[in-house]
Structures are given as structure tokens and as C-alpha cells.
Length: 506
Image (cartoon, rainbow, N blue to C red):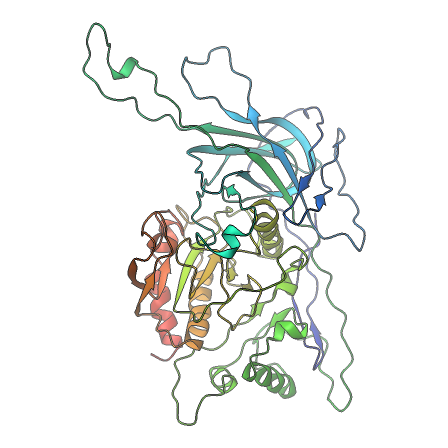
């Protein structure tokens, strides 16, 4: 198993503060009985949108395969992209039954996340996708797991530069499966109900007439994503001249009170000029108290802002984002008027120490597999309530994301890692959403309990140009006909709104 991330604080204008490294915990899904290994096959290399080839496609030997060593110049992580084809037809197959596509059991290089992509981003996958995986170095196969088909609802807006200027693909939601080196997948198209008609001697009736299966999208491929190793903790740096040294290690709580006064002042000064702590080399942006947060925004004398305390945020550097993957430039909008809450639909079989690996996998899936310019969501939250910087461009800025098709402009997207259709979200995750929105929405004067009018960029729920009145904190399903963020998480948004407004002092 991989070494797991523990975040640290390292501000170049002050000094680095480092937390101890922790050991990993197993996250393998439920396992079925052992089975013999299938024969090895050769993967095909993927060529990404920049024209470089992912060299992860190599023949996997029989037996347990150790993780391949990577050179210092090689980007962390890899993607194996395998074409799906019709599976062998069973002898007892019913006439007219849909043809199942997929891959039989096979070896692969180690991976931890799976998904299915196809050529046309506008095409929808009407059917079910299921996978089984084998835990690395074992003969144990998981039970069949459902992959959310996730049709086009998490994406850049139609007509946007990100959508039109890149080779964007259709994609299922990614599923976290833990450290694996074997896979089997099946994609079964929907069989719509046969047309109703009265029974006659010449026409027996609809129950005897085979329905035509809905065609599957062209160019389906299975993506196997290896997030790579967690970044090593940074060594403590010496203090700059004429500045007091900062202790090398500090407790994770309380986040701000324990910081030296000189560091707190430096962070506040950086916020005042809109310079991100992340850009100064930090792996964690530490929390600020309410008073420090208000002071950092440099308000006019006598102004009474409604801004929640800034929460601690793990930066992209902190979770190990490979900045060479994403598009270099950033996209911005004028404001942040609303927040859309999502679930990542990656399943709940992860530990919070593995959350950085989950994020790196989603990031690679969004960019390499789906063709997006960067990680789609502006922020992410894990089941323990840790908050992570998502799309690059600055945590205080109005960064244009690719999270809610039709409503990415002047909004932000927050993904709670996990699947919450039938599972209740942890209280810590809901609290983190409240803290994050109280601060970020407060920077732009938005009331978490209020309403806002947004203009649709076009979705399956609202046509382009329609003005829609929504809650300032909304669920993904409010802007798009989807199950996201899951029924159980959606029910908690009222609590998040109330708590967020209270943190703002409303």
C-alpha cells in the first residue's frame, strides 16, 4: 500500500511547519471467494489531449505485480485505457436481449479508481455499468459494484472555451476501488418497454415483441487510474533573516491560536493583497479566527461584514496535485453568488487518510480521461470534514469550475467525497460545508440562507438563457435533472444553510 499524506504548513515568507507521517489503512471493497488469476493481457497506451502518451500500458505478468518504480521526472500516477467490446454470448441468451459490452477478468498494472468514458460528450449512456476488482497481490475478487452513469451533468457549460476547445469525452462517475491489479467490467444497455398494442392473431401483443435495446455510446473505454504515491512531507526550512524561527511541529488543533503571531500577521497581509498562501508554497492554508478573517479582507472603516471564519484548507500541493496535468491558464467569473453541493459518487470505501489519493485519482480522471482543463470542483470535503482546494486559480477568487452543467458561471462547486444516495453523510462533512460556504460566500456578500437568480447556460432541466431563482446553497439536482448530491446529503442542505449563516453572524 502507498504511504499516505499528512499535510504540513510551509510558507516561504516564514517557515515550514510539518506534521508526522501516518501509516495507511486498507480500503479494499467487500471481497468474494478466491479465484484463479486470468491470463495476462496487454493494455493500450492512452494519448492525452496534449499529445503525450501515457506509458502505463504494459503487459501485466501472472502473479502479484509490484508497483513500477517511477523516475523523479515522471509524473505521479498513471492511466490505463482499455477498449470495451461485446462479451461472449451465453448459449441460453434470450433472443432480442441486449448485447453486453465489457472486459472479461484480466490482470492490470496497479490502480485504485475506475470509470468508463466514450467519444461523444453529448451522448448519454443508457444502461448499467458494473465492475469487479482484485486486491493487489491476492486472488480475492470483490463483489460486483455499480458505477454511476453520471451522464453529462458534471461538466463545463455548453459553448464554453473548456467545452469547445478540448477533446471532451462522455464519462461515468469515477469509482474508488482501492489498491487493485485485476479487473472485470460489464456494460448492459437498457431495454425499453415494448410498444403497447392490442393483441390480434396477426400481432400477438406487446409482451411477445422484443424491444430494441438503446444503443451504447461509441468508443467506450475502461479507465484504470493509479493516483501515484503521496507527496513526501516537506523538511522544515530555516527562518529568513531578521525573522523569528517558527517551531517545526505543532498540534493540528486548535488551527490558528497555536500559530506564532508573526505567521498569522503574514497570512493576514497576504490575504489583504489577494495573494494566496498556496502560491507561497504552503500545503495547508491555516484557519483564521472571525476577527482575523474580517481584518484580512481590508474593509472600509465602520463596515460590518457577514463573513465566516476562514477554515483550514489543504492546498493542491498538500494533496499532491501534479500541476503539469492541467491547463496552464485559469478561468474566472465576476463573482460567487451561489454554491452547488455534490457528492463525488466514488463510493464510501475510503479512509480519510486516503482522501488525497482519491482526489489525485479524480483529478487525473477529469483531465486525462474526460478531457477537462483541470479538476472539476472548486473544493472537496472528505468524510472527516477536511476541506481541500480543488480547481486551481486561488481559493479566495471566483474560479470558473466544471461542476454543474449550465450553472458554472458565478458559482462554486463543492464535492463531498463519497456516495450519499442511501448513506447518511457524516456530520463532520456537513459541518465542513457550512464552514466553507460561510467564509467563501461571505467574501462575495452572499447570504447562505438567501435566494439568488442565476441565468442558465443550458441543461436538461433549464434551457439556455432562462433565469432561475435558487437557494444560495443548492444541490446539484437543483440545476440539473440528476440524483446528485444523493438524497441523504440533499436533505442536509437546510442544516448547512442555517449553520453557515450563523457562522457569518446572521
